[in-house]
Length: 595
Image 1 (cartoon, rainbow, N blue to C red):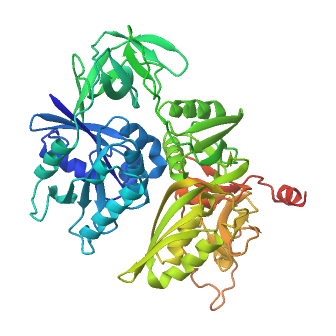
Image 2 (image 1 turned 60 degrees about the vertical axis):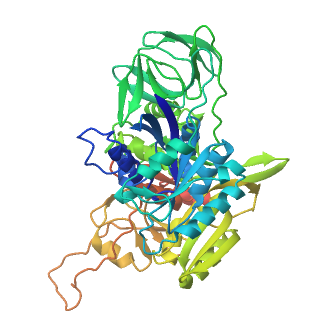
């Protein structure tokens, strides 16, 4: 059977997973059980909740006698490790662009990788039914972006289609169709069949899976040759070569893996029984154990420190609390998360290096759902010494805000050392592009939403390393810290809410050193939230009115990480996110400040 291998790339929420759903349904690649679902490819709980793709996943459809392997890639730059592995298995990309928003930072990031790999693109302008759609302009912007990224003449001569992914329709030219026939036709005509060499079996491991029955499963594209069930193969690792027996071989069809007797050169397959195999290893014929080039993944730019939870509430909500259990989990994560680095500073302290806050926070969120309790420190950027100069990572930032709100946003970005690269004005909104130090964006998202009254849109991704800009003030507020342990009362919160923006509700149990709110000034404030009103027999007019409390501010994991100061920790448990001071006792904290 003929083959085509293609990856679908797009910015977050441009409709990529929805289009894949439609392709699977129209090619009749789904079982009856899956046919009624939406965002079928987002199988991970976190992906469904956040509406984003985190893990690169494989599927396959058959059209006109040709098998099309489809890899659904993440749209967020923080999961670039997944993108780079996915692109190593394909011969072309389907670039999906929103007809209103146009190319966004994450589009730029993934497209740059595809251009560098020499992959042939097909451009799909999606959501052309939007009121503010500007399909032709977006097409020109996409062409300009490809040219800017150094695309070849062949890549710039790309076919393009218009689509409404939600309706499962895509078409060439002006004749709107209600199906994806044109899209499948363009894929078969424009994307080259996989280039297969003659010779013994060779496959580079691009992803890993695990089965309780079959053990570790390696996924990748067959570079050359073939392999059968029960055959002995060589595993060419970074430092050693050894042999293993193939337990089973699988090909993809729809969302299923089908066991096959032998694999086809150029196909994306799964091989079971690969214990100890790592991403980037080569599985080769035992007679000719030759290695393919290892996958190159961009270096991490952000770090956080993780330690076991040491708060007074340790062990109340989670069952996995020891440093040994945390270490085992992090080492297990390293097997599949190629963009992650784990450094053991002490037996109890681990430094995690990742591609961004979202990359690291997804790992922390996954761990807390598994029953872990952790303490996490303030995120920091990773500096590099280049040509004798200390350099720091810079982000490419795009903001889209109403004209009336642009002034405060511009002023705030100015204090964070952002440099404007481009600006355009249309329909009462301003879209501006900046290069900004990565650490300047810690805590900026919440501030940005406040400045734009929720009407602004921002996105960013890693741009390059650049000169160190010196000290940056990213947080101008202080923390309100509990000075007594016990239950928080509405009476105390009511008396303090003019000076403190609270993070807790009445009835919340607090401990000494726990951060319960935010103050407008940049110094910390020790407060007592455990005082209740004294009850007497005397009643006076006006003194017993109902207490009216301002609703507390609730953090997501990313927002809590952005809020942290250097002397603070985030306590992460399966049920709660609590902010706290590193040193809980107020007297010891004061002595430490004096020293």
